[in-house]
Length: 356
Image (cartoon, rainbow, N blue to C red; front, side, top):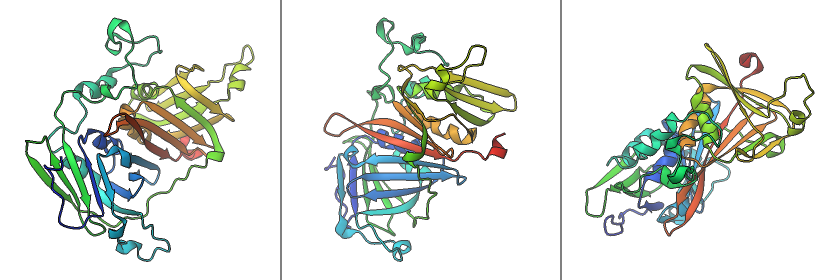
């Protein structure tokens, strides 16, 4: 790859390369519902990309430095952007800018090899809501066993052509430059994407001490299938949860409280899906008090693309209804082994008068 892509003559603030852009593109595509994206490069951590919608939904993709074959951040070449000159504290080990995310994704897929394989990306669309022991034939491996849902191989094809990438950035005011090649002997192309000074992003801090509900789904398909089953015409989605003790102490003749329920409501009625207190479904369930909060379904449905590539999902609710969804995405390390990245969504709950 070093022979294919020569070092730029201009001094670079960041130089990063990866031999297969599919994983990089997948982490970006998971938050690709908005074109205006804030991108931040940090010397030791890597890249964070943030988008927002309607001042209500905030999504962040974390792409760590060890996901790249090469990661070189030259702190000596860092200069503050004009919008940062008046800031009291300038981080000398990070820089940020805005970029059109759709343009970046189109460039990564310029050879048509940055997308997930069609067989894996469409398989989840036709699954129905079921119990863990009620898998269909197409979800079972040889001898009728369910395949390992934590394998990244199911999301990306094994024998497809790959696109390698070298990314460079000279600093504020400069374009983000991508040099892409389909293989060592194939064509290469250079894309320069204009960058812009960052505007303040929506801030939705999650106070862990105010957590009312924490759930870790053992596999992301337990949540993905539930959301996929909801009618697209749904207007809002309601999350209902109760402490385990309250569920177990239900009196005879009184309707049992749900442990965790997802309820979709729209013009044609409502749909309810209850989750059992089963470690094969909910790896972790911690609920300090009964909670019921509603959200716009249009915002929650933005998570489906990130869900498709994740292996585990963490769902947390703050006392005031702030929702945090974290999706664990496995990414291979350049020198072997796997590393974990994640995509996080935070969403404000509907006001009581709107939710009713």
